[in-house]
Length: 136
Image (cartoon, rainbow, N blue to C red; front, top):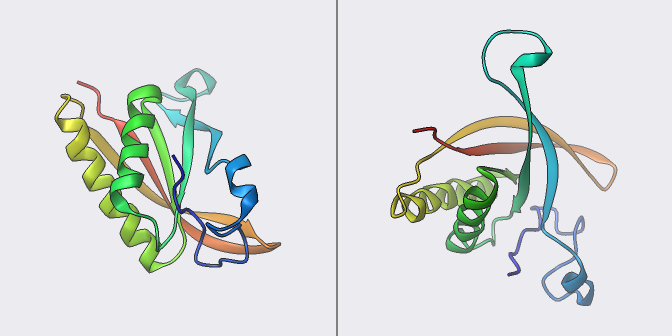
């Protein structure tokens, strides 16, 4: 499935009409460190979350399906967006994904933060939404 996930700066990534798109992926696997209680190295759980990049033109229902699939498979997903329009689409996608997963008895929570990303050798601030399965 191909999502329109280019950032607001469309020169940074290929457009939907780029023939190279079929060979590219919209998701990456990055390590995430999460404190589980206590202190020291034994209190950190190294996990991987798939990174989904959302643009203003991304369809929230398609992104929601991707989030739900990643949560089912890995238990955690990361969504990144740059700009108000992209962040709006990302938040709607999280809400829709939650309703998809609730039908299966899975609940999720979202932790927003800022992250610096490099686009065309320029630092931009993005919104990072870490989405995880809520423990029962």
